[in-house]
Image (cartoon, rainbow, N blue to C red; front, side, top):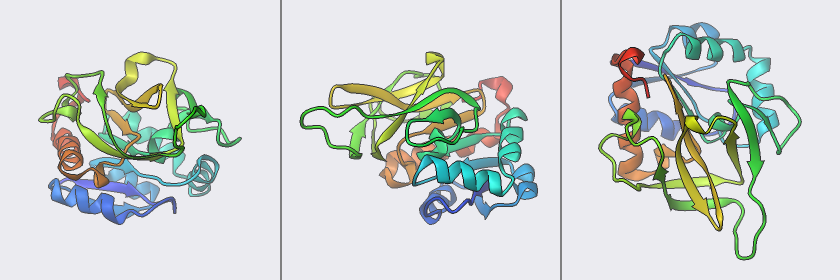
Length: 214
């Protein structure tokens, strides 16, 4: 079974992510060891909380370079919620620079009449990379579970794999580029749809990126 390093940096409950990966046929290993992250078959970066403490935790544990190296080597990588946002250059929520792996900014939803912030609950995805293997065996507009006040705004629209609409605002819900996949929603809280997404991710561990990546 594939060993997936689940990065532990004190930013969220990792238990439900690990349960989902186990159901998808993988062996998750919660770790903050750069060596174990480097040796894993794939890496998941989950996260719940605020932008600045997250990147501070990663830097204090010397995990930024191992994460960048895993992605550069072509290993499957999945960011979840805050684990998506900190891949970007910067965020409106704080002052710390992000990891700078994906060019762009993390922005806050604009207030508008009747709009609830945070965006919390089930919402429908609009898939913008329909051939991406991560969406295999899903409905064309699957329902997934969100909890967030901020969203990513990539400079290159081609990395956008799905969008979601909250009020009048259509924002990025997922990105995919080569071996890197990251989602704003919580697959581990998204019932059968989320389990299918995790299964699709796990299946890529045995599939070379040259055959399509994500």
